[in-house]
Image (cartoon, rainbow, N blue to C red; front, side, top):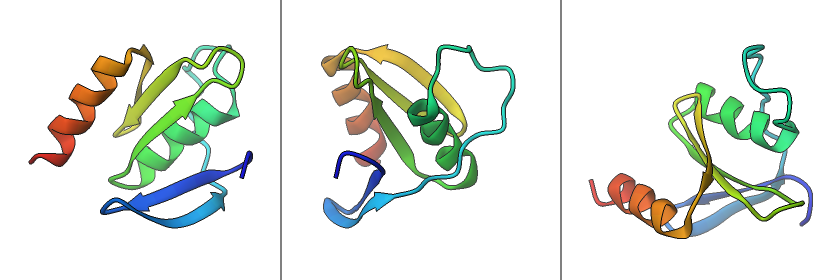
Length: 87
């Protein structure tokens, strides 16, 4: 399950090893790889919230509505997810 995305709906894994659409935004920093571009891409085309974890550093990023917040802390991640799912 190393490659591809996991789709979670209502706290249940619905699919694994999924291929996501990659953003076509050319204004992104060059250091963002395919994992981050896919996180952005899927949120451009759906109401999903996407998490990307760097294989090299373990840094966490969160994408929503085609925007990505890089290097979020675990506390920031928890706050973001709570805010989304407590609505």
